[in-house]
Length: 130
Image (cartoon, rainbow, N blue to C red):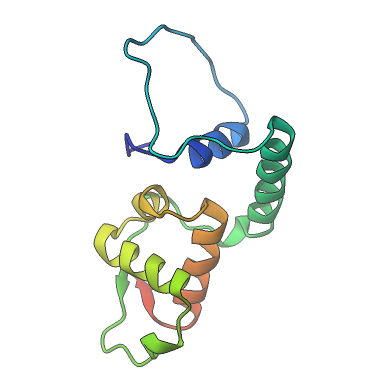
C-alpha cells in the first residue's frame, strides 16, 4: 500500500485478498503499531473479509484502476445535502486524494464501503473520471 498508516483491519482484509505472494517474517524493533487495533475473533475477521471480497467480486468489471483520477463535477448540480454522512466523507477524500488507490487508502471506511460510495458518487454525477 502507498499509505504507511493504513488501518489494521483494511490491511488484513487486503492481505487475505491476495491471489499470490511471498512472505518473510522479520523482527522489527520497535514493533509497528496501529491507531486502531484489530478487534473481534479470528473467525469473525475471516468471515467478514470473505464477505467483503465476495461483494467486491460482484463489482469487478466496474472497478477502476488504482491510478484512475476522479474530480468533482463542475458545475455540481447534484445536492450535497442529499448525501449520507458516509458518502459525503468519501467525497471529501476523493476531492483531496484524486487517485482511486489513494482514496481507498485514506478512506476510513472499508474498501467495499468506499467503492460503494464511489459508484454512487459517479452514477449521480458528484464525481467524474478525468
